[in-house]
Length: 359
Image (cartoon, rainbow, N blue to C red; front, side, top):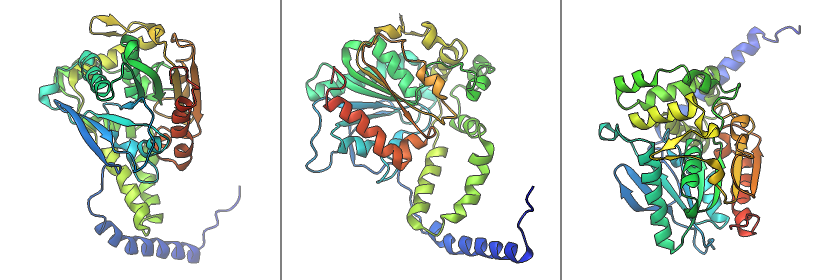
């Protein structure tokens, strides 16, 4: 073993440098001001209950494809992760690649929403948003991009309403909810979800957030704040860090019944691949999905392991199924520079060049 290279002089120098960085960076913290949530201009085109359907305003002179893209995000956390900063925005890069982008913002459920179930979200809200986009463009079908839990919702929606979906993209989407390397699943499958929901009503977002952070407690609750000192002197880099922190802790409560159904049907029963998930009066059959399908996953994802996502292959009725593996984690797929260069163009170019027959 090599000796630890620490001398009193070196330790003193490092402590002095640390103090200098912290001291000079405090002014940047004080002057940071309000941290924005999403950077690309958008307009609300439809509202219902807590939900808002947004259309992002294209850059001047942008050429957009004929078929709009509707993003379906997860209920957990907020969808502005897809538009977190100017130079690392999935939304903006999709638009620059020729997509006309819409997004469902689920808002913040409260006690009035506690009885909403998966049928309300999938056959209700998503379906009406799809109909709004179709009507605005005079089309019979739209393109869907489902992210994380929103990808699972999009799979269910497409299986039940294939006639309304032209192309489907799933991103870091769980399909097999019981893979051996899925720590979150191992925890969730031990939850008495009936007791939880019957006791609390809506499930507090803060409770879920700390559950996610506990999956990697050292790096997600301690080390990053120590490392923050290395960026605190750079005003723009610090703002980007604070944007991410705001997103992490901006966790909506979850409608109790929808949470109960999702945990039971997807985690406890692994119903998406078992073919047992029931949404309203219908059972979700993935073989009903016949449109072109692009499945994107992160090979270092600790929330949705790759095997949980790639389980989709061979389980749909699509004759045009493709996969993209991104070398990063669950969040990196939205915010890393490499992801922004790779993922949005792969989605857009595939449709524009007719790689997907339905495009």
